[in-house]
Image 1 (cartoon, rainbow, N blue to C red):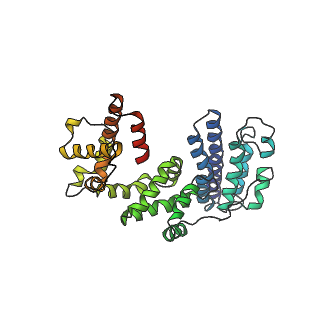
Image 2: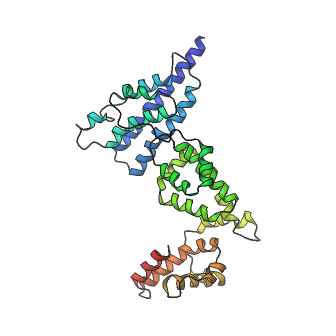
Length: 324
């Protein structure tokens, strides 16, 4: 029994130290004036990821030890000057509201994961809470996948919720990753395009997904889909993804392009900057992979034409803005 008690004590100490370290790292990042995106992911780890870790610890802890005790002990050691209560915050001019919100968000996320009762939050916080548990409750990944399957517009709503500090991000991340994999398998490129555009417009959501899903889980299906654009080629040697990562961001001299690539480049320049527009013929002969490998060269040639006075600056701006 002594050995078991010692192991229990080690787990409790580890959980307490992990909570304290997470608050310390966020507080230090704020004091160093780290970029907003860095602060967001640190805050998301504290609120969305840490309760998931603690749930694993809770499963192997027995009375009199509990995760609630660990949380209480950790919060007693959190610097109250760095993470003030809401009532203290009003007396601290210029203090970031993020600091005062962090403790409360963390506690409500813990309550969402049933690590602590909601009724204990006020005591742990030392103040009257100014938020509540999310009205939708704790998300379940499989249920989210079903919702998105029956209502595709729900996908973008969930991606937006990845930025919420409520404790549900892990289930959302898993659902979004599964949906992307399924869409790739089904070649549903239109729905997939909407999801990818939504993620690219909100880079912080990708950071949050990375907290819960390995890059391979998110990207492998996308890479396979992109590689399948190549026809009648040895994928091991001519993978679009490999070529794109090696040289997709590099502009190539015109004399190094093939005749077909030159024709495509000319077609895109005329489509973007001349009156004929982007026609169906160009779209039919230019594969998506070919276009993406030409983008850097297209942009480079267009800006050089503008610098040389061949292309007006407004025409350049209008072409890229209107066709993007």
